[in-house]
Amino acid sequence: MEKKKVSATQKKVAKVMHEFKVGELHVGKSDTIVTNQKQAIAIA
Image (cartoon, rainbow, N blue to C red):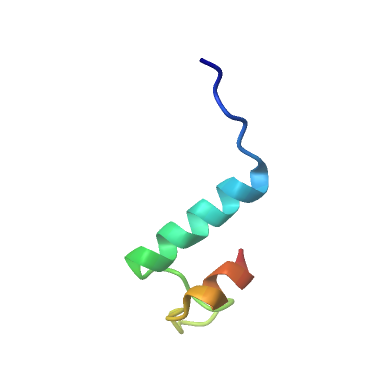
């Protein structure tokens, strides 16, 4: 069985969504934490 290739974009989105779920994703360089899932995807 062949492994599926994962693009760089998919890796970035996965990393950002993990940070969002853990509560570590910030807006830019400020201390404001992202609370909206759509905003997290936009950051990715």
